[in-house]
Length: 455
Image (cartoon, rainbow, N blue to C red; front, side, top):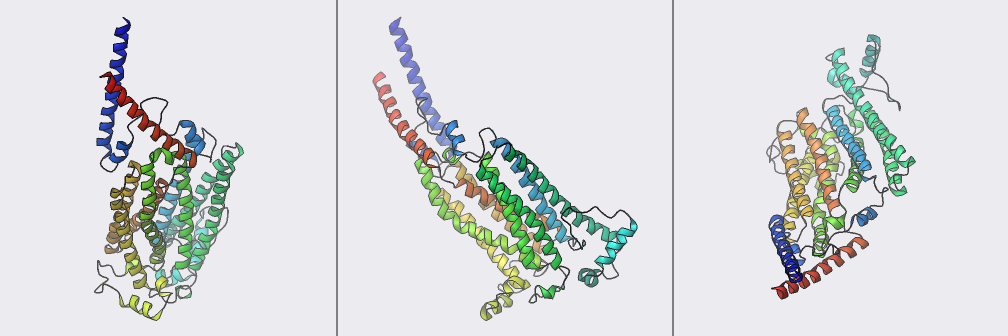
């Protein structure tokens, strides 16, 4: 009976060993060629005491931003705030494209209700008639009902922004009061809240410029249509990008796995270090392209040169060459053909560098998370460029213009997702992962020797 138990024990050990080997083979086939070298370096765990990944306690300890157990709650709230901001940006684009942004000629911190009587509506309409937009574009042509439509759009945009502030501020105060956040995160999110209040002021500062004649803010622009200053719309857009980036980044911090789980082996960490360098040109190009967008919008440059790939008959507009030769810096921010040409070239550079980073990821042992992020970056950059070309050729219909502005935020999100994926594991996690990999290799050798002896 004793020898039977010993034989059964050896049989179970042998079956377990071959089961693990088959599991490794299946994992290599499922992960694809880019990740197979990593699986070849360390066969899966043999004993429960030997691990390749950090434990749950190490994962929680690595997240020093919130108390254990609050990660999901904080992450879902931040994800909701991020979605709120995304919708706010889309509504802002719709407000601009429908010519609604200058209909309200006053601003209050607390906001105001819509006019409730016919007299109040007529009073607001008379005030609007005093400014260049009505005098140059709608003089004698706009009815009171048409004014009500654009007034409502601007009013809703402002109130939606106040709603976003409340949605962010109240849970933030509750979480800080309950000490669910560590001081570092509480301070950073409070800073974002303060930036949100400043964004409201910047928004009014931007709108206020539209009550002046356009020559005052963009004297070199060929477009004399009344509109807000391109410099101020760029400031408003940049602040919106910072707010969105902050909430989206900390959403990823709360809801995604730590770097030690995404890049569990030394080879994967080395791939991350190489990809950090490879993706840098794409990140820079996307950032500059995003900042060039408001100058296209602020100068109404999308309504001109609605041809592709040439700008009418020119590959390079003569205005751009003249601006370069004469050193006219302001032309790069105010001249319609120069601004549009810059945006086109930046879009091409964005796609080229993003696709280049994605192709480079095939030459390194990238983890599945890094491979996905690289592919997402290339796809979103290419899709945004194609959407921009279609919007230009169709002379910027409102729906296409809003979609293109939303595509810019999706591209930014993909960049942030990539940068978040490129985080390196901390010291404790790295040591644990490397020790686990070494122990796994030695245990595998011992198991193979034991199996050979048993055979």
